[in-house]
Every structure is written in C-alpha cells, then in structure tokens.
Image (cartoon, rainbow, N blue to C red; front, side, top):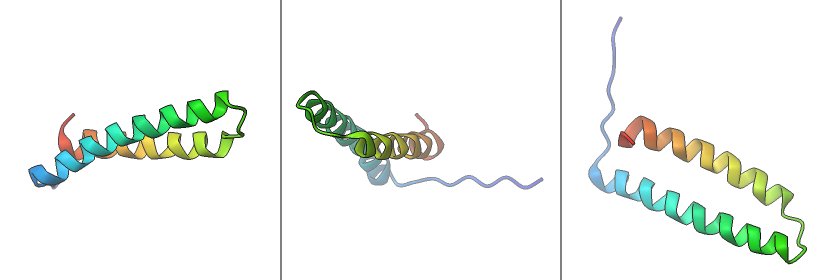
Length: 64
C-alpha cells in the first residue's frame, strides 16, 4: 500500500485558521438575525456544511 502526504505551506494553514475565525463571526451574525426574527434556516444549514468541510480540511492538512 502506498501512502501520500500532502503538506500545505504555512501561509495556507494560517488562512485556514483565519477562515475558522471568520466562520465563527458569521455564525454569531446568523444568531443575531435569528433573534431579530429573520428566517435563517438556510444560512444555518450552509454554515454547518462549511464548518464541517473547513474542520475536515484543517484536521487533514493543518494538523489540528
């Protein structure tokens, strides 16, 4: 069996971590909109999908 390892440049790893922080900020804004009575069901679903993919990328390539 052959194994491959992909190593990202540090700058890209930093960008992934920054993306996670931005996603958290977006989730807070979605919560505020929800409290204000706005239908955010689609936004919450999309944010959840993005969070899942981002978490996978970070754990796979940034080693976190």
